[in-house]
Amino acid sequence: MSVVEEVRFPAAEALPMKVWLDDGDSPIDVIDALALSPFATGNQPWARSANLERVRPDASLMPARARLTRAAKEDDGRDSRLACGDGWTLRVVRFRNRSAVLTVTAVSDELARSVLEEATKDAVEPPPQEADHVDMGFWWTGAHGPRRTQRPITAPRWPAIRGNYSRAAGESLGSLMTVTPSDVNGRLILLHGPPGTGKTTALRALAMEWAKWCQVDCVLDPERLFADPGYLMEVAVGYDSDDDDHRWRLLVLEDCDELIRAEAKEVTGQGLSRLLNLTDGLLGQGRDVLVAVTTNEDLARLHPAVVRPGRCLSQIEAGRLSADEARAWLGSADGVGSSGATLAELFALRSGRASTLPAAPAETTGLYL
Image (cartoon, rainbow, N blue to C red; front, side):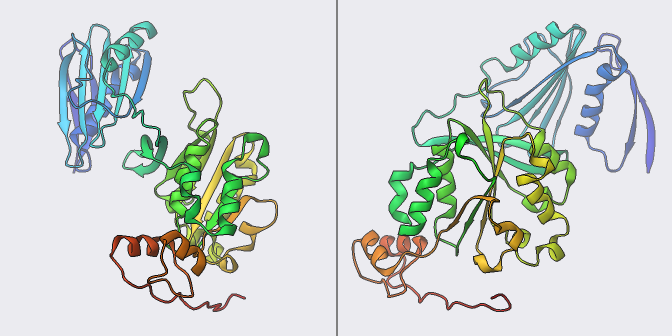
């Protein structure tokens, strides 16, 4: 059932408008509509927004003389508020992960700027200053479209974890860690190997080693990224850092087996084509964007277009450590068989969660030679 309701506010609040309401609308949707009213009607033609992370729990996110006119909370943790003042309107949405979005409309740009500055003053906790943290962005699609949040994550330095990888993988990863923008001659980083071989840890170390010139963003729903052109455009060309110095971006897509298998075209439709277009097609032109893909698949099972010469900046297999490498890592031969071990298995042995390791899985080719 749909209804049309005319919403009237006191003249001082200056938010007259008509709102269409139906069973699919929530109180937060109403606040969103009301917040846009003065901007849409031209009463407050200037707007400024801010996206905050690490918001202090006790931060009000409101100017001192704000008049709260609406407030709504959802089960998913969203807290939305609408406040007004002399010549301005402020919408604040807080999220459970301590991020927040603020939008101010006002009769002048200077007023919008000053209201936003007052609302956000001292509202954010400083980022961790520990040497083992690096900022990483996270993209996902929610009910209101693509969103990005940024968080400090723990990340090791490459020399500290070099021994977690086989000789061949360590040499390739070591070369990748030293890459600079002038060395980029391919836009795709392919990291493949069985589970538990340290692929994610290597990417965290890469984020640390490249921190001065490259922002690393992890896409949490890569299957939706390449199924939705609007989402892809937002991630590929719609985000720019506020840093004074230009930085490259590395998009991390973890466990994308279906996207890059040999039969990916039949399974995912345009997903593979859009991935390749992002790395060296028209979509990637003019944008300093790299893409890192991790997969558990063997290289022989991947689509030939993904692994063709010239496409990959780096193509690395993070495999099992040999028996000698595993015993050297562990400092003991106990529990390590002739087939070696994955990094996860070695940690299990060292912690006492396992006393012996299972035999390595047999190599199978199936339909792929």
